[in-house]
Amino acid sequence: MNENKATLNLGGTAHEFPVNKGSIGPDVVDISALYAKTGAFTYDPGFTSTASCESQITYIDGDEGVLLYRGYPIEQVAEQGDFLETCYLLLYGELPTDQQKRDFVGRVTNHTMVHEQMTRFFTGFRRDAHPMAVLTGSVGAMSAFYHDSTDISDPYQRLVASIRMIAKMPTLAAMAYKYSVGQPFIYPRNALDYSSNFLHMCFAVPCEEYEVNPVLSRAMDRIFILHADHEQNASTSTVRLAGSSGANPFACIAAGIACLWGPAHGGANEAALKMLEEIGSVDRIPEFIARAKDKDDPFRLMGFGHRVYKNYDPRARVMQKTCHEVLQEVGIKDDPLLDVAMELERIALRDEYFVEKKLYPNIDFYSGITLKAMGFPTSMFTVLFAVARTVGWIAQWKEMIEDPRQKIGRPRQLYTGAPRRDYISVGKRK
Image 1 (cartoon, one colour):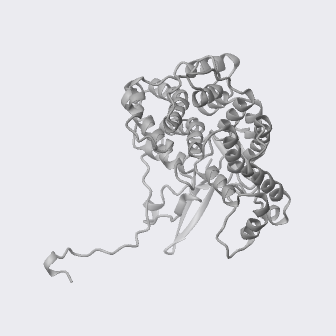
Image 2: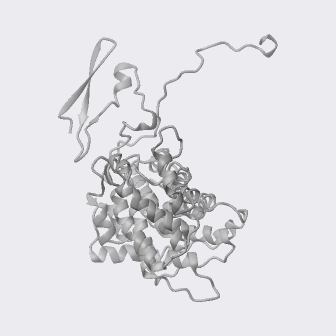
């Protein structure tokens, strides 16, 4: 693993540091001994050039447009598998056998209900509370209800906590939605699959029968798969950092949800939909395309390009197909926003400016349109993201806890404040 060494010249002295090689991806210079050797730190705002951990879960090659779950291309996982199978893969490292899958699905299904007292917990929120605020609070509160799965040193309790969160997150998310629209909570149905059960809890009402559309259920399942994990992003890093202190798993996931709520992270699909609303109609698209190309105009086309992917987002290819399937199924004919979206997609895939700069429609562009067509309000978009990402957070948290080299996270800083100075009593200050 340490075949090569990197040399750093600092203050006239040469220092050597091991270079670690991963199974794929860039080499990593191990600078864990840098401070001890040199008395200096590195400076890397946003940690964009820093590997904070060693992981075997997810791999991204942004230049080539590659996303692998445990080595499997995301396109294959999303098109050939289902979400709970993906959960098993992320948690345990291998695809399940038929028996392993049946056992895993059974365990998740039998944990979908939440403690009945939690229904009263929801009434403490204002009726117009944002569903993400409700979800963050209710997930954090799970540690007050499930004391038998908060000991992170016990492998069995870690397992139970993992299953509970995967199982109960859709229930809590659906409850947050129902509370926001003033409808009664719908209990989970164990006869339904994971995604169908979630849609049923969101859109069924007690006074009439609700049959889940299989096309929409499959679309929901794919959305969950595509968002299940994405390497060491902001919310995942937050979960790992919180977990490094020994915090219980429910608190760690609540921290991840809070981070995901930030518009620069989990709110991208909502931002894309708001942009479509700003454009308003197909005839105004040329105006906004011109603005996007104008370097002096601050306007940006949301849902195009990606910070990590400098090529086509591999998730977007699957999401594009899913989006068109949903639009065809629901048969929306008079929605100007969807008309704008489809025309904008057509232009972006052909316009020389977009193609040259690789500003392809990304997953957020298609998922926002898809979720709107399925009947979800924009306030629920990030909640759905949290439901999907829960398994990724748990897998990353579990991997960190089981790593014997893990220690509490403690980033350093470049201090530029006042140097040492003596305290002056208030009467002598000028």
